[in-house]
Length: 194
Image 1 (cartoon, rainbow, N blue to C red):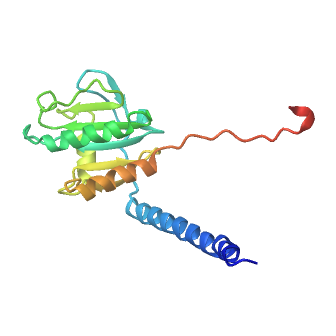
Image 2 (cartoon, rainbow, N blue to C red; image 1 turned 90 degrees about the horizontal axis):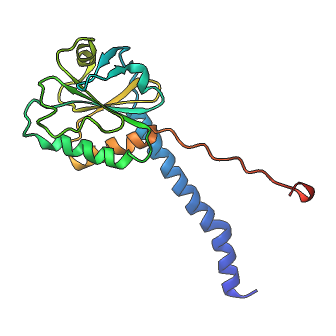
Image 3 (cartoon, one colour; image 1 turned 120 degrees about the vertical axis):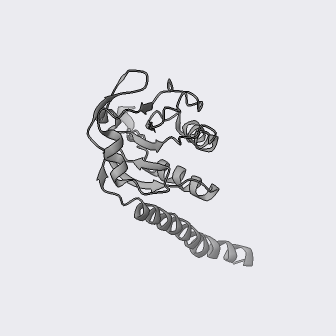
């Protein structure tokens, strides 16, 4: 046997499987860490309200979709949160599996540039006629801007999303919770079934 052939066999039999295993193991560890952070168990309140456009909103409409909740800041000059929302919307708009519930306690949504006619956007304004704001505010930690709700209506975690790393984490966690498309099953057709 030649030396090149022997090196090739060693690489294929030992090095390639080890590198593959290491790559898959690091991905699994990353996913486990993300799931450990998203350990919330608070259910989204069962409410029936109207949005700022007067259209009906029920918490049941969020089932089967990943939902991003946020309280809009009262200062309309804080365009950072609006730009983060727009970037997240642009990231996931093709999936049609994400919803955005914006809670406007100060009536700043029209002035802040929040478009309320986007698919999956629900802008709720004060006064809190259905109790949504007050029930969410009770469990909402201070200093956090966003909450992530899974497809079953459970608030999984809260995010500050101030630094670039925190924004990246929010987007990664949202992507993990999005429902996956079912793959078609591959069917093997034998001779006479073709």
